[in-house]
Structures are given as structure tokens and as C-alpha cells.
Length: 266
Image 1: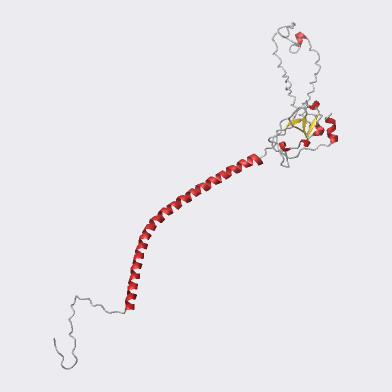
Image 2: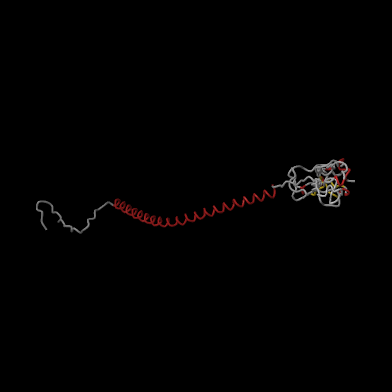
């Protein structure tokens, strides 16, 4: 080891091998800060790795979820169309059950016209051809005074015949009013019957279908109060009857006074 004769002795300088790592001395705080930074970087790298793995997994999960949502939308579309069809069918059924009211078939009864046969047409016969025997002085061989007055003499004077007077048939007339005509427009019944009748304008009795008939105020026939259905004497049961009344009637049953009803209940 060399000796320094001029001053203080110096420590020998050691030669550091090239492969030797030089560790710098750092303060304790700085060393802790660097360790914390390294731990934070390692944790961040680990977290990014986990997130990357989850991202790949989520992509597969999202694809399945999207397909399920597509199927759900299709199912909801078919359910909506089916619900609309059901509502339409229900609406049509309600209309025909509660609002559709067929018009009543009120027909005027008329007498049948008299069928008259056409009068026969009288076609005049052509005169026969004169015979070659005309002029022999004998009225024979189908000779007549018309074709051979020489042999058969002159024909008597013809009296003109007046054709019969032809009267054309009268047009059909409505049937005359019955005894019940003053009660027209009212609902009546008989004591020994359950059927309800409408008195037509000409006094006919028309059976009322209590299940289908409804009036202008929206009231149905089966809801009519018994005070609006009048019981009359059984002697009117043979009154002429018309067609059955069905459907909607654009007026309400007439309310009778006691004076109007009295002649028909005795």
C-alpha cells in the first residue's frame, strides 16, 4: 500500500468490478416514496389487466343480452298485434249486441188485385170462295146469301152489335180500419194471454218480439212498465193480425187516457 508522506494518510482506492451494481444511497423518505410509486404502478397494471379480461367477458355477455332484448321486442310486438285484434273483435261484438238495431219490418197490408182475363178478340172469317154452281137456280154446295144471292136470295139486314163495356180493375186499396184503430200506437194484451201486441195505424194487432224490440228513448220492450201495457177485453182477440214487430222502433209507445181506454175494457 503506498504511503503519502506529504499529508494525512489516504485510504486505498478499491477498483470496482464492471459487473458490480452500484446502489446509490437515498434518504429514507425518498426510498419509501419510490416504493409506494412502484406498488401503485404494479397495482394499476394488475387492475388494467383485470379490466381487460372483464371487457372481453362483457362483450360476450352483452351479445347474449342484446339477443334476448331482440327476442323480447319481437314477442311484445306479436302480443300488441294480438291484443289489438282482440279489442277489434270485442268492439264489433259489443256493437252488434247493444247498439245494432235492425229496422222494423212494417208492411202495409193491401187487398190483392182482381186478376181479370183479357177479352177474346173476334177475328172476322174470310168469306169462302164462290162455288162454280152459283147461278144454277139451286142453293146448294155450301152456297149462302152472301156468296150467291142469285140462288139463295138476299141476306137479311145485319143489326150492329154493341161491344160490352169493359171496366178496368180498381187499384188495390188498404184494408179498412178495425175496431182497435183508436188505440193505434199503444201496447196491449189480453187477460188470458201473455203475448204483447202493438196496435198498428189501421187497428191491426202486431205481435211484439220482447227480446229484440227497442224504442226511440233507448228503452227495450222487456223493460216497459206494466202501466204502459193495457189489458183489453177478450172480445177483441179475433181482430185481424199483422206481421211480427222486431228491431228498433223510432218512436215510443203511446200513453192512453182513461177515456180512450174505457170502451175497450168492458
